[in-house]
Image (cartoon, rainbow, N blue to C red):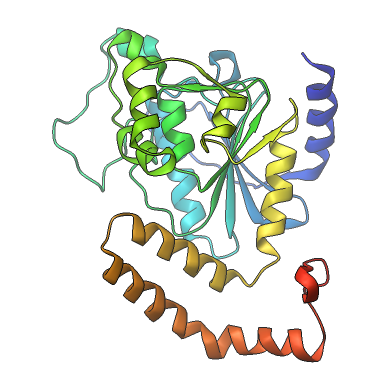
Length: 294
């Protein structure tokens, strides 16, 4: 194991406080999703895929655990932002567990139902709160689709991306053909979808597939730092703008402008006027500074 990963893992274990819960899923008693929060910052929920020996591939049990973890995050008012990562530091998620597919021991309905879990778990959710994906190693096939659920992705220099399930005749059925074109454009998305090629971290950063590129062993640490930066701002205003941005992707310009205005105007008296007073009276946030905002 890379010495940076060892040091970082030791450092991080002192910072993370595991939430006490006894969740049980499906017919399996194996807990393969770790739910925790950053010590001193319970508003940042950490959701870790914990099948490192399988490169954090997701099987049916893990998918249900992931769905439950995200549902709990959505319904917990103390949690304001989540980070999805792969335990072990060497893989985010290498997709769905093909050994389960090969065994034909799975049953999937032929009709889509938004209320039912996706094969990867939470992939049919439209999250009400921000999500960051911290990516180390492979983020491919269904793993790539999981990462696309996030608002932002922090990738390590050795991380890899791609629709590698193309090789085995496994289709994208967890939002890959929907979210990928929205994120990087149809032309680039079709390149990945049709060729099934591996995209290395630098190219992923260049095309906007990942938002931050960091040295190996630092993706989770950087994601936590990014989360803390985001949560320094007035939360309701930030999240309202986030939701309006998503609304605009699948609606007309007029409808999107209406959504933006009608949701934003509700915040003026409650949030914006006090914020303006901080700027004028307390001289906070002047000259583009962020470090004096309280």
